[in-house]
Image (cartoon, rainbow, N blue to C red):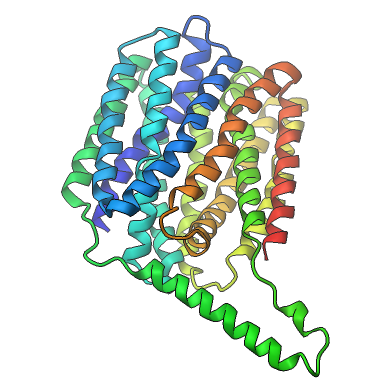
Amino acid sequence: MRWFTGFIFHKIAFGILSVLLPLYITQTVSGGTLTVWGIITATATFLAIPFSFLWGCLCDATRRYRFFILVSFGAITVLLYFFSLTTNLFMLGFFYVTIAVFQVAHEPSKNILIAETFSHLEWKQGFARYEAWTELGWVTGLLLGFLLVALGLNTAALLLVCVYLSLLSFLASATFVADPALIFERGLVSIERSISLLQRGATILSKAETDTHAWGEFKQENAFALCLGLVFFSLATSIFFTPLPVFFARNLILQTSIIFFLFLLNSASCLSGYFLTQRKAGGSEANTPIKKIALLRSMLVLLPVFAGFSPFLGAVVLSIIVLVAMGLAYAFYSVSVLSLSMEVIPQGKAGLFTALVGTGSAIGCFAGPLIAESFGFQQTFLTSAACFLLSFVAFRKFA
């Protein structure tokens, strides 16, 4: 779909930044350490949480979804430009935090646009299609970063490339994004869920006289457990991935271009997963894959523990296996929880999903680098595995 175009350019820019920034802060900025990077990212994500609620409430109240997407991409472009002009650690932190605040501005609007563009039965397919195209942008960004670093471009030049890409995302969104003429799909889904619950209750009530266990079947979904699962999953993911580029640089002594290539493989695998998800988008139980994926990821994040004890080539191969498997699994998880969130979270609170994910991510952004620098990367991976297990338990309680 054409209105995805701006989001693709946005993802290209942030694909480059995802690897560039932690290495830039820890290797070239005076006073920049892994813990400092963790504090910056955690602060940014924590401050973005209340704004997730604010942006979600405002876009639903005004029904001007295009406006908030343009505000997000326009502000990020300006802030990235000022970010590229300074090497002062405090100012870099300030601009990064402000970018994070405006980064979440487009998320609720984007989710609502997809939900209102596709019918309820096509929601998973719609989210899968969006994620596939934007993940293609992320892969392109990592590939572009790999090629530009290999060609000898410095950090300042790469940051400027990200500014131009962000400007393209704003211009493309201004051209192609439009607010839907009618907004009713989420309201219909809410009514359908209420009627379904009443129907189940009436059916079980009619069976109650002959079946004493009938009431056990009348089980409403535990929304609180879903929220906990989302927080723990994003927490575990952030603990694992935030210090990972530095782990590759310090422990495996990989060059920056190779680190870009490893993350490129992760995103390429995730992209493949999104295309596979589109073909399997008709599944009925949205919470079934997220339980399995949480359990799978808890095992995958333990594998890098052994990378430090492996020969160089073996450690790289092991890292590739982990990143490819985690990328593929995440595609199925992402589409499932996005679709599920639009069903469970009521209208007017579209920012809740972004806030929940942001909460876990913020804690992980701080905890991951802190644990790595204080206790070592192996302890970091063990902590991530434990959090994935907690998310698995929470998703099991959900329904």
